[in-house]
Image (cartoon, rainbow, N blue to C red; front, side, top):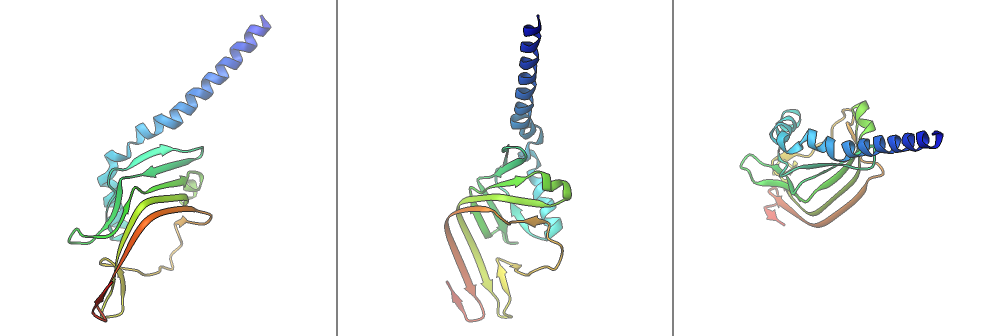
Length: 168
């Protein structure tokens, strides 16, 4: 009788652990459904930064606890004429979840298969990516890239030097 109770306790504990892992791995991505929030995400980025983006077809999957993987077929930074200032094919990044409790974003892995950036050096000696100025902010940083594993694929970098009348 005591042996049977022990077996049931072990089976119950293993069952609860399996159910918890299943909810974490498949349930959370199904509940969040990042694809249905695509327009909202793009609008929030625009409102907070002024950057127009297209996040393609985003997918969310859970990594080893506590982390989350976010991927897409393409993420682009768009100019007002819908041309791409920056394009990243097949981006995938891993975020640690615990720093989110402190309102920090900690990216631990980043990969992509192809990247393309269009820089502009204006006649006023301003450096842009597409139409967006590249400038440093003295505000508190909201995300961390320390100890990040980065694996980037083929890349193309273009420069339109308006000041000297050259394109590269």
